[in-house]
Length: 84
Length: 322
Image 1 (cartoon, rainbow over the protein chains, first blue to last red):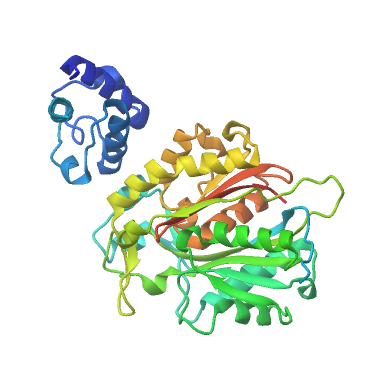
Image 2 (cartoon, one colour; image 1 turned 90 degrees about the vertical axis):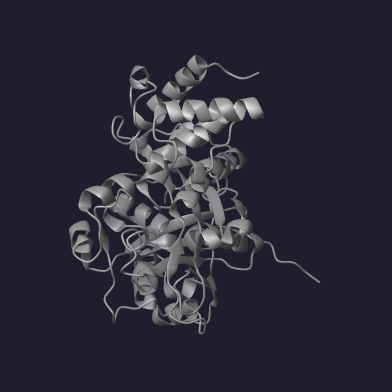
């Protein structure tokens, strides 16, 4: 069963807080990883790996560079979850 | 046919390290490649590294580190019957470095071979040395990790030349001699992933070091903490009970990510890369020898070692600090 946008957002917030030290409540859909949350490409790899464990959705390196905002990741997880 | 009996266990008697005197800072590199001190510190964690001069050879560095470990062990060259040099940067395939190093240290006619498991090399060599002592094929082994990576770097490639550096580290391995004394080198957990051979490589004899950084970062932060955990399980030491975690100093971000997954507090994690750079097979013994010199770790403490790199190959074991 696919997760709701809210569930994915909450899970992503926990991951980002643990890996990048950004408080989970600041992880809102419009935020840009690089510009707003100060998260670089290496942290994005770690976040992708943690997201895979949590949501069961693989985010390959090639796809990562297209995911610029929190909302991009939420939609990617949601779409991949539906098709899986 | 008869078999010989070896020691009940092996232990490390002493460490020694050597770094070239030439310090290269991030600002120095920023003069020749498009990078900055801030970028290197935040992505890799390195502040400065040591680079050997053109006349300083791999054998020179290995001899310096090996000689220090030998002196600190209290043994004489005549006590050593096997010399293993872990390296992936020999100046040529033959002769090996180990026989030359042994000769220059005054060690007469030991078994001598080079071992290439790249950045995992020291842990592989340490496991082989421990096994030789336990099997009775050697009594005291000089294990050296030495690299002159600067010879194999493209100094215009900012993805590699900011990371790698030169240096050597060594350990003297011998038998457990006191009755009831516990072994000082735990069982190794090792393996390889040849399907990812092209992720870190020197493609041919005319090429220089290439690394696919993001793929290696993902692999290192995903696949290695279970290897480290396996080494702890086999030794019967829980990660939380370790006194220090000394992973290969590949990249501070990788080191911190693996430590976080093992739930080892950063205060107990080696961060020698800050001033040493990534010295491949030398990084673990170099870090340990520097921590011992600074009295940051003490005799009898448990350290978890984790080597990983090109191959891809990896190995981990728990040791007792000499």
